[in-house]
Image 1: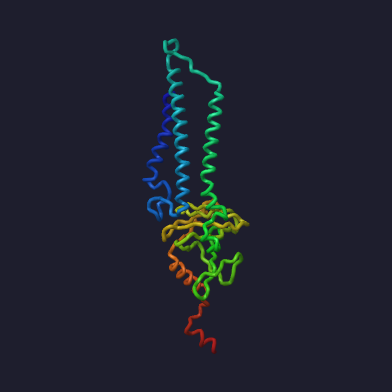
Image 2: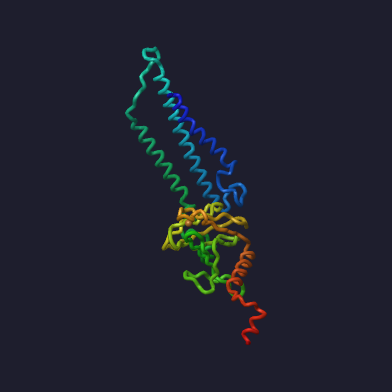
Amino acid sequence: MKRFWCTFFVFWPIMAVILCWVAPAQNWWFPRGASGTGAAMSPLGERIDDLFYMILIITAVTFVGTQIGLGYVLFTGARRSDAPHGAEDAEKTWFTHGSHNLEVMWSVVPAAVLLFIALYQMEVWAEFRVKDSFPDEVRTGPIAEVTARQFEWRIRYPGLDANGNPLELMPDPQPTDLYTVNELHVTSAEPVMIWLRSEDVQHSFFLPELRVKQDAVPGLVIPVWFEATKSTDYSWLCAELCGWGHYKMKGRFVAEPEEDLREWMQELQNEQMDDGVPDDVGDSQVAD
Ligand SMILES: [Cu+2]
């Protein structure tokens, strides 16, 4: 029985290591989506992945190391107590009352590792979350306002001027604004920023392929920036359990070349400003 438990506890770390090895090939890892490989589709996303892998390696080494230690202690203990009473190699299982040096070591080493991770990730964190570190391109203002509500995403864009250039997005809705639901179009040419809001409960704006995840909090307007490296459709989900319809709170996130984006916005504007009266009958009816 003792051998069984020894094997049982040693089995799981081995399984964990094998799974980590097999997972990427089976597509159980990052979403394949636009890259086809699971690689991040934004420059900042690549750096977030580097952090992820670094932490994975640290935790994997720690996990495997402690499990090997546990397996060693179990097997040694089992062997000692297996010997029949009175046998020549019979030996009492030893007891220990703790070790001051070990205690200090396994307190200081994890503290040092955590401190290292905290300092090492600061730059990436700041670039993603701290306004002063945002890229210059997004300082001109947001391209859209995304409002989460149970259970959809509402998007407000600024309207276009006479030359087809987007106006400035105002904090309050304007008569010229354009609206879509569950469909966010951005340019793939440069980093862009949105304003993220929530109308009811807490939601989470999640672009897995770009490694962007930001809670939408009622009462707050949160600036979120990202940069898609490829012109394509990406996944867009809500990553916060926000009610019964949470599962269907997904949208279409399209990164496209600047001219395609302008064309799409122009179509949206034409559609929304259309009064429903065909041009050729409009004048004569007014004259009547
Ligand atoms: Cu939600």
